[in-house]
Amino acid sequence: MPDDDGSAARWQDELYDLLRRHNVTQFAYVPDAGHRILIDRSLADPGAQSVALTTEEEGVALLAGADLGGARGVLLMQSSGTGNCINMLSLIKGGHFPFLSLVSMRGDFGEGNPWQYPMGQAVEPVLQAMGVICLRIERPEEVAPTVAAALTMVFQGGSAVAVLLTQKLLGAKSF
Image (cartoon, rainbow, N blue to C red):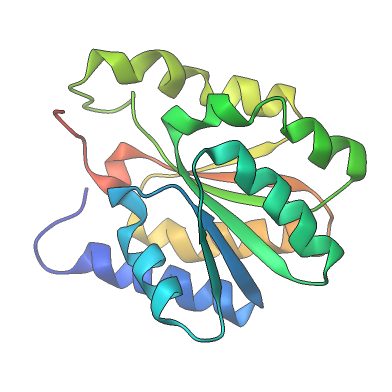
């Protein structure tokens, strides 16, 4: 779980640097506290293109377009937005586009909001049903190696991968 010594900011800064070293330049997002550092860094980076979305499914199409234009992208979303993407993921599957998403999870470890449970518990099975490989991260030391593996799987292996940032990593929410 994150603590007050800045470890959350450290792993998120390392994550952003890792994405940029792998030439990820397109950052599609719906504002979310779990991705605040990544979003802020992408907005401040003149080498990155950040796009605020009105719904998460727009990010799926944006990443397909980024690939067609020779760019690499990532979709930053909360687990509750995953349901909005399911139909659009057929574009990724049918077009064989690389797809990387970082999903801040709700509805699991220590969740205090009962409305978050249905989609939070459905994220993995519905993404897997659409051909998206799910990798879970629970501790800060797992972030870099897991995301590095996902980057290889997506941009060299041509897979669709969602990295699930669990509440053990991000901290459980009571709201």
